[in-house]
Image (cartoon, rainbow, N blue to C red; front, top):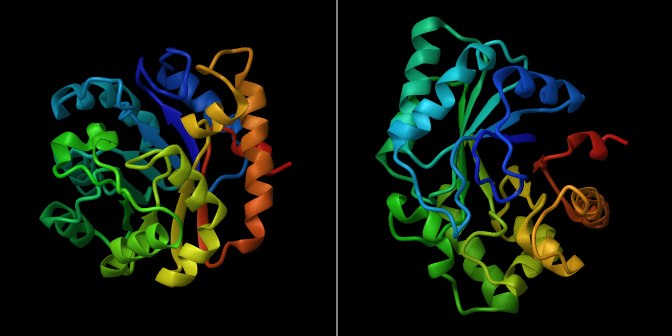
Length: 260
C-alpha cells in the first residue's frame, strides 16, 4: 500500500504539498502496488486537528484523478462525513475503484456499519487507538496502556478479537497510543499477535514512524536522512516478514524499495 499525504504538516514529509499531477507522477513511481493510501490530515500529536470541511477542501482537487485509479483507494480519515461523501460519490457515478476506509479513530460505530453496507467493494481498516472519541483521534498519545511484554500483546489481541469480520482489515497502528517500547514489542512480535487473533487480513505500517527515526538518532526527517530512514524500514521489514501469516498489506511511503 503506497502512501501519499496531501497535508502541509505531515509527520513523514518535508512540508511539501503535491499537486494532482504530482500525485499521479508519484503513483507511477510506486510500481506494482495493491492500494493507494491518501491522507489529507496529519494525526501526529503535535498538529492541530482540522474539521471535515477543511479536509474535504483539501481532497476535492484530487477526486478527478482518484476516480481513474486501477487499484483500491484507501482514504486515511477519521471523519465519517468525509468518507460518506466519497462513498456517495462513488455509488452515484458508478466508480469501479474499490474503496477502503482507513479509520485511525479505532471507533467501530454505526458510521462504519453504514459504510460497509453501501457496497461489497468497500472495506474498512480497524485501527488501534485508545483516544475516547473520534474528535480526539489526534490526541492518541494521551491514552497509552501501562502494560508491557506478553500482557500488552494479550491486551492488544483482546482489543481486536470482537472485530474479526469480512472486509475488515486489522491494524495494530504503530505510532498510535503506544510508548517507544510498545511499538518495538508489537513490531518484533507481529506474528505472535496474528496467532492470538487469527484473522486473515492485516495492515502493518511503520514507514517513517518516529520510533524508527529515534532508533537512528534523527531528531526529525530531512531530505538528507530520509533515504537512510526508508532503507532502515526495508531492513526491519525483511527481518519480520518470515513470521507473517495471512494477507498483510504493508503501508509504506516507498513501495518501490520492497519490490527490489
